Image 1 (cartoon, rainbow, N blue to C red):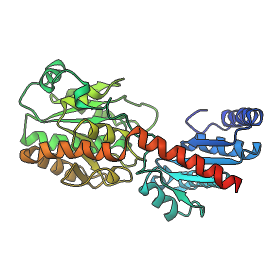
Image 2 (cartoon, rainbow, N blue to C red; image 1 turned 90 degrees about the horizontal axis):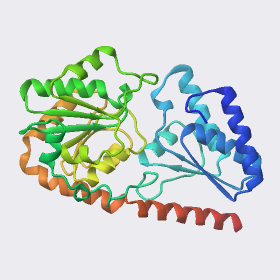
Image 3 (cartoon, one colour; image 1 turned 90 degrees about the vertical axis):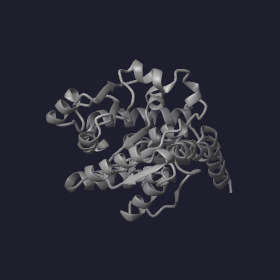
Image 4 (cartoon, rainbow, N blue to C red; image 1 turned 135 degrees about the horizontal axis):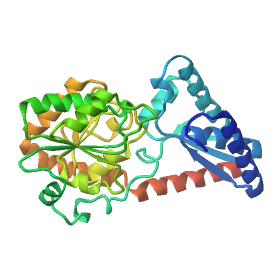
Length: 328
């Protein structure tokens, strides 16, 4: 399958999926992501698969307009039509599906949301042997400094424009603050403006690290994760950061606002608002006495709700429930 809409390639993928499903005759098929959902649910329906489950993560159509809004919403409606069971990754996603009348079928949320959970032993500060000071020295960040980290694709939808704007305002009043950007630049889908890239490349306290196979060292050396995204399903990086005892500043969007509790494990700011983001980052720099408690609460929240095992067990139980309902 290709990520973008490609009618010919999509039709070929649909036929291949149909052939595989007719041959294997599975009892249950479970799809995730819009393209996989549309092709898999259609092929499974055509092939007569009795249990067809789709999980909606981040919805795209509510953030589009005109023809693309109509087309993308219609695609999600087709997924729901061919699916026998629908899962939303969190309450925010469920509310959007209901609000836009995408389906009248029941919508399930497994555990506390998120499709997979995380490995809280892997994402643990103690799993990285180097201390914070050594990691900062390794990456060229001199003390004293408050280090904010962003992890994700460097695109406009992730709020990078507002993040750089907010950081520049913060830096004007505090020359010790540092911003670390971890993730790949995308030049095809939703690229950053050239003028913003120049600011990132030339700013003395912005460090662009590119794609990293292991983000844990960057989370450990930071003081706070910032994710000013415009839309998410249920962001894994917020779970990963929390598990590594990192408070988070996030935007008030589905997923993010289901993990972060203001003044306990982070802060929530309006989306697309660089000023509010800058104020939250400045507040974090000022509340030294709260930070150790926030770090502990951040990990406690993730361990209690979002471990791999909790999510996996909820998914397995849902499969068993679907099978029992089929046999009644």
